[in-house]
Amino acid sequence: MFVEISLDRERDDPQRIFESLNSTGLELSQADLIRNYILMGLNPRDQNKIYQNYWEDIERLAKDETNVSRVSDYIRDYLTLKNKKIPNKGKVYLEFKAKYPSASIDELERNLTGIKRLVKHYNKLINPKEESDKDIRLQLEYINRLEIDVAFPFLIKVYDDFVSSIIDKPTFLKVLDLLQSFAWRRFILGLPTNALNKIFMSLYDKVEPDNYLYSIQKSLLQKSGSQRFPKNAEVIDALKVKDVYNIKSKNRVYLFERLENYENRERVAIEGNPDITIEHIFPQNPDPKWNIQLDNEEYIFIKENYLNTIGNLTLSGNNGKLGNKPFIDKRDLDGAGYKASRLFMNKYLSSLDKWDKLEIEKRFELISERFLKIWEYPQIDIETNEDNEELNIFEADDPKHKKLEYAIFFDQKIEVNQVTRLYEEVFKQLFERQPETFFTSDLGERISLTKNPAEMGLRQPVPINDIYFIESHMDSMNKFDRIKYALTIFDFEDELTIKYAE
Image (cartoon, rainbow, N blue to C red; front, side, top):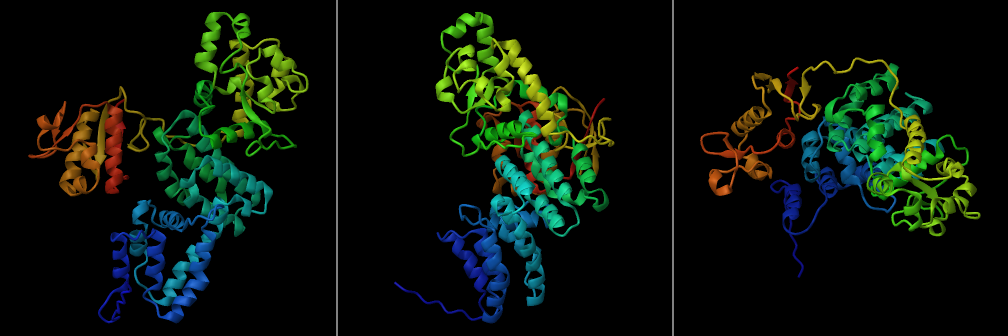
């Protein structure tokens, strides 16, 4: 069946009709909606001009190496950079419309010129192989493996500064290295990744052209709480016991490739190399002879605490041959043992006569020294926020076992000294301001919003008005998490500041 619908430009709005298709079963991407929003109001000649000179290039460049379109993601990053606010993935089109209302052809071209300019850099961030400079390409590959896409709004501007000769290549490389140190140290500690969104959203605003690298280092070092740049001592303490064998394959390969290739003129490729695998020195299923070489207490300690840590893991081109053998057999295996290996990760092992708890810890010390040289903590003098000052709740430390001195919400001081009281007050004010949001999102469900606390089985209900109650039976960290989630939903991330009591 064919249906023809004719529209009258004077009376009908073709864009509204196109948008409505999204609710009738035809799945339209945010990029589809944006493209048609840009083109539909133009006459055919201008449509061709805009499409061929701008949008076609944007669609071509915003594709990853598997040829999957990333236009929606790119526009989202571009709007994040411009608005200092991260659009919901399903509302990129609406944010685009709000940012760029219907305009003349000249204004449309000016807007699209900026979008087209930065998409060239976005293309290299998602396809590092497109970067011709091998040093930059390598750093982009590393960033790609870390999957820190939230840094793209910041990186596309830094990339543009490099291409425009505002910064030189060494500075650009140092910025790329700094981002890896920041993200990777946080990963080792297990700090929340959602804190990165807010950091990178506005990081470019902190850049000082005359002190480019320093200004970025300074901004990151001044972060505190869940947004902090982990220091040497805490990151090494965490690394010593972290299970790095069962992390994502991309992350695991990244760790070993960087450790192995630090200051190595002959780079060893690990990703995609079937000849090199990650091997347990003390095996996952040890040969019975390991029980003889180690006393029972040490055997159990290693298996329970160090088995999958960096101290007990190495690289091998002969994992199958080494298997579960005793340490001396692994060391001396003809042409395949640790003694025959040219890899840094095996150098220390080649001279040992045993493998026990003490040797694992000694090897970890050597690896940790190398770790701190690769993922450096910036050595600059700055004023940090260590004097118990006022902090945005997203930057504050874990509230466990802490009391508040006060809070500031919507520029009004709230005299609260317990997290529970803050929790109640924040949700009271949010419900008073915008009650509908509690029902049009999953926020109400998150906080167990109800008129009947007994029916809902609330263990510690607190009222937020004369009718509704929420659950407050949870620890301080969970209360903080729910407050932060609510502030994100309402787009009020900058409205709540707290001060811990000394």
